[in-house]
Length: 162
Image (cartoon, rainbow, N blue to C red; front, side, top):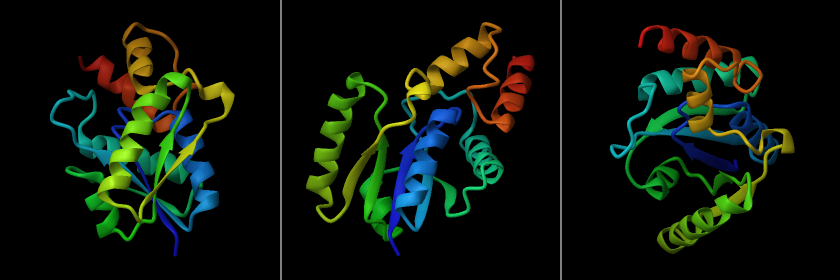
């Protein structure tokens, strides 16, 4: 079984992330979407909320060979533990490449048997990222067409409570 890990903060998951997951799900038998717990970031949603939103999005999109889990620590250790052969990384623009290339080389050094696979989202999602979604939503902009339904509802609820 070919297993891939798609790591990220997913705060929140966007339609661009889902596009990458759909593409990866056609290439691998199983895709584990790993919601990172990063102490240097202050996310809008808790790790448990982010995992729940990813799971809801996967269910709504009927991506049956993808699951969501949270993790902290070294990604290659999580990948080894789950017997993954690949790490999925999305590239939206040239500006993403330098950082992702460095990370891919470091991961290859730490775990030579795990391959990094770069996937590009559909061009209609290249401008999307979680930071922009949060900011537009905070400022009252409509992000309904940019995020899964569960995320849109969760953003509205979260911002109402702030």
